[in-house]
Amino acid sequence: MPALEFANQLRAKFRELVSAPAEFRGEVTLTLADAGRIAEVCEFAKKSLGFDYLLDISSVDNYGDDPRWTVVYELYGIAHGCHLRLKTNLSEEKGELPTVTSVWRTADWHEREIFDMMGICFRGHPDLRRILMWEGYPYFPLRKDFPLAGKPSEMPDVAFTKKAPLEGGPFVTLPGGKDTITREPRVRVPEN
Amino acid sequence: MPSSTTEYGYDSKIEGDVVVTRVDAAINWFRKQSLWPMPMGLACCAIELMAAGASRFDISRFGSEVMRFSPRQSDVMIVAGTVTYKMALAVRRIYDQMPEPKWVIAMGACASTGGMYRSYAVLQGVDNIVPVDVYVAGCPPRPEALLDALIKLQHKLQNEPVLAVTKPAAA
Image 1 (cartoon, each protein chain N blue to C red):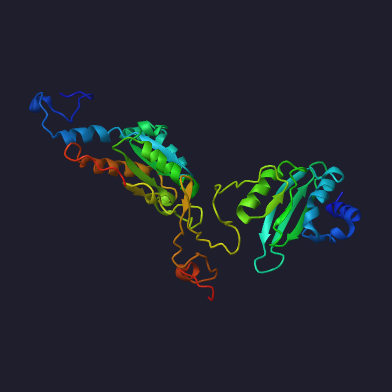
Image 2: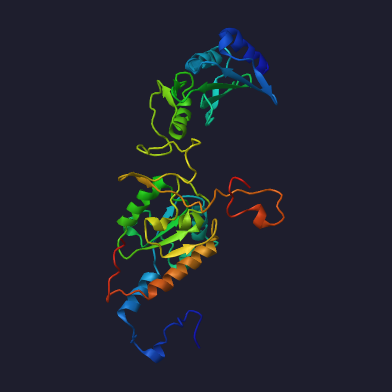
């Protein structure tokens, strides 16, 4: 059964909550209007549609737009081999959505990573701690307003951070240049 | 006729039973032939460190085959790999647990300067937290480069004062 049919079943069940399925290069994406009902939709997708495997959860920072956050769920059914993507938007003020750990236990670490890197909270998560950075690190490094070089911080006896010297970077390559100096500039300002 | 097992470094016919040297030089000579490394393997450089210890490159030719996984039995810490801020104080603590005299080799671009990781998460060179004696360039350096660093360290410590002045503790 193709993923599109599962998407339509999901839509028939939840009606206006779920958008029309968007298909791009054979991958089907659904957008949820209300992030607060993500767990409910996931529960149905697993129990009734056979999406027993959560591939990944990721998050997007639409910095400057409202709503700021997009959380993306990648679903897969091992028996039927179909992939489905669920997206839901979340405003910065809210910054919280229900956990799906009760649906797939593997969501535990995925959600902790998003909490650690982006600062989005998952309501009802059994153990919402930082997973890569240490407890007490004051920033969320993958946010768009966090500088690549980092910020200084100090957690006595645990860890410290300093600002990395970027020397005018971040270093990027410019394809099509004639020689290495133009292709790989030491410093690149945003205008050129 | 000398047989193939004759040791040429010391000729008993000329020198008899007496060797004249300084105590400092003798002690350093003993020390440099058995530098026991603390393998601080943190990333891919550790794979080259393992290769340096294996049969093809054989670090035991230079007396450093005894990789000690306890800092209390080590002489030289080989920092092989990317030192993240999360690991930084652990590296410093292991260095503090090593008995004097002690040395540090920063192996590879990451340990020396942070390498390609100009990032919020990576310490920009292990010399921010421990004093480094030899830096090895490369990403990762070949085992020969590490062996060269070890020989350079041996040359360095041959001339260090032992009895005259004790090596000051690292700040």
